[in-house]
Image: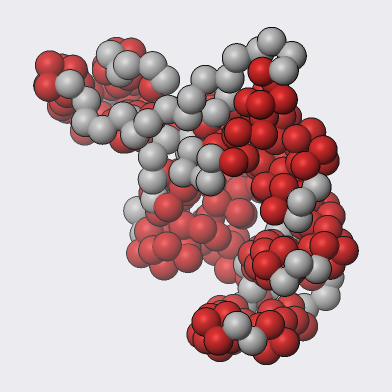
Length: 294
């Protein structure tokens, strides 16, 4: 379980950011390293307990890759992977594979990038330098296996589908407002089924799955709420949405998965502060603040 730092200490650590960026712009590697290690030193022991530790570890990996210090980069990568052991394997495989290729370790990189591809197809390679997927494509092609291109940005939904989704959503929201959650869920699912596959590429899927998860949560069907909201997290902009993080954290918390819940409640708090907890989230905010003060 990771926890959020006291806000004052969190802000103190973040204050190293401008100096780090300035050092990078000057090409001053010694000063950049000093800033990162100073920030790391401020994280209380045991460091792996805190959310911000993962952010700093990734920064250190990237710094040592840029500095061509392979041993240091790999040491911090190993520590980051231990820290991220509860996260989906594709998250660790994708970052590790990119890091190893950046260090010139193509064979080791291929093993990890292939694992990411086997898990999630080309999705982990979207918006990345094409050489990462190219490594997988080239080696699989030698074995007679075709790797598709990374899917392009799908753009806007076709007008006819957009209009149908909007109409179904309005009906769902009307049922939702009357606390007729089953009817709302059925209509949200009907709208979701209209989206061209893969559904998770569309912004509409974000709010449709969030609506499904929200309705299940308010019906106290926590496992179904968790499933829908986890799926929503794979859709555009959901990870940075305070409400999606809040509802997923609440569903996990109320289902008894309190360790996992704290990560999402922390994100909701960081994105929107106390206000996001005002409508029925008071107990979750109180539990989060106890953790922050621990």
